[in-house]
Length: 201
Image 1: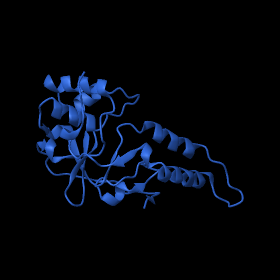
Image 2: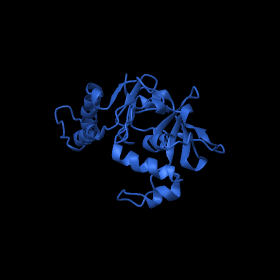
Image 3: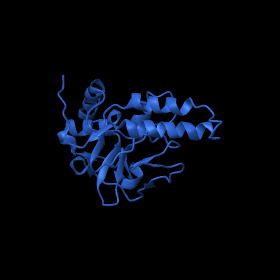
Image 4: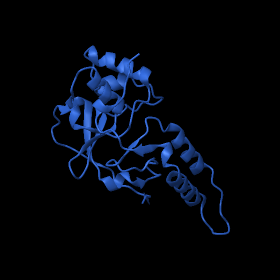
C-alpha cells in the first residue's frame, strides 16, 4: 500500500563523528549505471587520487545553480542496514577504482524508516515509492518523473465535486504512479556494488 503524505518530517542527520565507511557494507538502491561515459571519467578521477568532497563537488558543479551538490547520502534504516540513497555513481567509481571505502568527507548518514520510502510525497518531490528490502529503482527514471510533474502541472477545476486543481492533480498523479511501477522500479536481484554489471569500453 502506498501512502500519500502532504507533509513529511525531514530525515534525521547523523551527528556522530564519521569514519571510513566500507563500501561492501552498503546496500544499493538502484540496479545499474545510468551514464557509462560519466563513470569512466569518475573512475579515472579517483585513480588519480581524487575525492568527492564538498570542494570537488563545488568545483565540478554542472548544475545551473549556486547550490553545491550533496555529499553521498547514506540511509540508515531502523534495523541498522546502510544503503546508498544518493551518490550511487560516485560510490561505484570509488569502489571500481580500487578504494574500498568512502572517506569521512565524502558522505553523510541520515536516519530513515522503510515506511518513509513507501510514501508518495509531492511536496518533497518523492514520486518513486518502493520497498528497499525487496525492490530497487531503475538507473534512469527521469522520463517517469517528468510525466508525474506534467500531471501535477496540468489540472483543471472539478466543479462537480468541488475538488481544487492541486488536489485533483495529486490524485491523478498518485494513480499514475501506482499503475506504472515498471517505469521506475523492479524486483531486487542485486544487493551490493560488486554485483553491478559494468563492462568498461
